Image 1 (tube, one colour):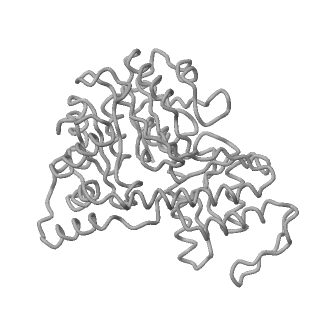
Image 2: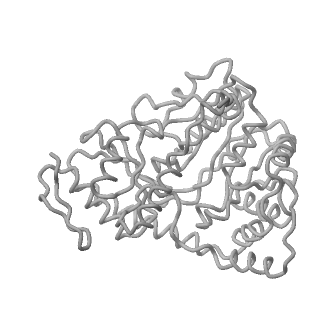
Image 3: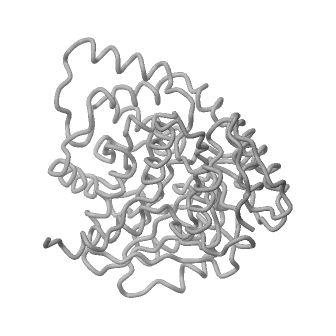
Length: 405
């Protein structure tokens, strides 16, 4: 079969593949625990459900403008004013079929083949593949000190003549690390000085813990004109537990939004009318669901941390946001794919190999499920890895026997 060079270079999404694996095992009746998931288990806000239901019941579900319906754009404008202190015009806003599509449209709009995009490691699994999809070159940057938070020097030293953009994701998937304000300030100033695009993937920016404050990149930007190269990406998937609604957005200068809208118009047309109305209602509605989700996730995180502390040899940098942790299991196996497959086979716990995020020896463990899943999942992992564990483990009525050393 004749395929394009780009098509041959793209791998599947590891996280989506593992979601499918978990679903298949559960359908078979296996007692699988999914600690690799990327979606909160809470319900979508009632305001969103009622708005979607009302439009469906009206029977008037039609095509939408390629940049989003006015009601959603107005909600995004209000959201941006509330959380970023800047009121964009409608021409600065594009709604999309999820934050991922907004990023993809931005990359299509700003990159030429062989240009480079920098992003810190560990990174979301899709960044390298998305960059490659437009013929550009991904340039991961691993912090020199081995931590999850880069220094400005780490970014500066990989900038070259082909560098076109930087992507920052804070709080970070997979580590949960929250980049300090000083780093965001330095990178905003660096990108302005070098004329680089800065894509802020803020999809988790309200899911932060321990009294941390939101960091607003606009606080450090000196240019808010149509020459600005700052792009804010966000959506309803994480903070409102509306992953299946697939609504995100981009806020940027008017010319870029115009081009991104043209691209989206030819690729997918406008997002679903039903889902846009639901997203607008969530943004404009009562925000208690976000506060409740944050409280639940912070408690879940604390439980996970305590469970992991029972391990000898597991190192963990406590996540300050998101619903992910990224512990280092290299004491047990430096090959994260092999370790993840071992845990799935032996104790039916789904984890995501760290190598998928650019960091070998780690596993991404999610804490967005139930406390029961977290405690039982970690118990199973500990039993599988600890050579001093009992020879048998019961999962419900099923007895597991250690047949490995």
